[in-house]
Image 1 (cartoon, rainbow, N blue to C red):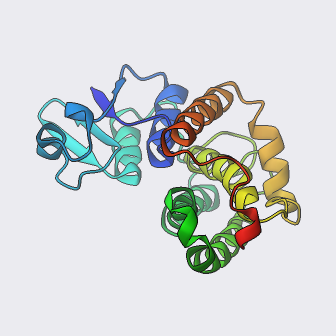
Image 2: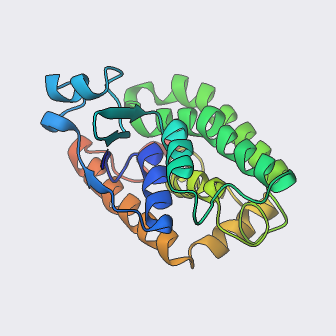
Amino acid sequence: MRLHSSKLSPWGQRVWMQIRLKDLPIERVGAAGGSLRSPEHLAINPLGKVPVLVDGELAVPESEVICEYLEDKFPTPSLRGAPGEDAARVRLISRICDLYVLPPLAGLLLHKAEHSVAEGAVLLPKVQDALDQVERFLGPGPFASRDAVTLADCALVPVGFLAVTVLPVFQDAAPLANRAKLALWWKHIQGEPVAADILGELREGYRGFRERVGWPQGALRTTI
């Protein structure tokens, strides 16, 4: 089995954290043909995105679908949470991250400096509102749902990284300052070994991205 992904992809790192936690024999590689738009990669995933999991003749795109596929195929140890309330919370937090937090956060990361006023004015409130929803639905801690790592933590680790890394580029306010549960979770998750490795890879990917696009930390603060 192979996972096509990258170190900076928050959706890919969500899946990679799951793979690491379950100690699955899955190789991580980049986009086939070296590009998301290459014929080789589009033959695997016509959506032209990562991550995509290849299992024999089967190609599974979309991070949430991949995570569910891996939980079905490798049920032990389960990262879905205890049946009932915990499992529902895990799915809900993962869904909020996937649909409401990451799209505007990624938009802030990828947009051009000359568009910062218009785009930032639209995207920043969306990020803040989505983080408020995460705060509302988080469990009592120390992990996203009580006292065990779940798929919710896998989804939240890239969110936490981007929140504390990207938001200060646009505004001075600490993104976790008024979100007590999220701040507690962030402090705790950084000490979890697999999560710490994922965060290290995200930092490495972010440094490479900044070097490629010439986007220095702090350059856009005065425009919002």
